[in-house]
Length: 266
Image (cartoon, rainbow, N blue to C red; front, side, top):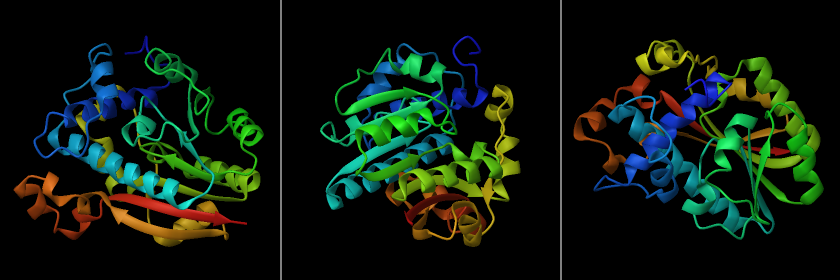
């Protein structure tokens, strides 16, 4: 897949795309992602994703879909910015075509994304590293007083802590007040995940896992407020097979994958 993506981490979006496309085939499906199904017919799969990884991706996606819908309902001028958007169609899945969405990712990702998504007045794609400044200026120029929600799904575990801190510092400096929803793993799970065959074959590596709640304040600063912390395996239990529901009661497995909602008010 080197001909598609210059950045190795970008390849992981094909795993998440495959997971979402397969979800529509499930009897107890969490959602139907027609765009993912359409894209999978044209974009080659790089792995045969495991049941555990497929459902993990979709539980996370459904969780952030629901969080996004709630944010839109509770804010007067919602502006949704998806950092490291990949080929995700959150705006379409939740029926929020009238709400401003910005999709930010590397140039090679956005180039592929443009083959399947059309830009509109409320749906824009920006080719930029999320650590750079171009996308920030575009969002601020168009919506200087928006109620900002940043969704960083399936991304930050591939960052080193200094990069996360750099991103958090920029967000606070430029936007002052916003909410940020993202996911990661427990610190002890990072090494385990890096040994997984699919990741080794793609040459990608995770770097960051959460050690404690206090670490969030170290990364996001004194103005950060932890709005909520959830765990992937606790979401929508009816979607799991019985054996996985049983395994989920083991504490270190139950809390292996973390879903975080932060608020920043400077």
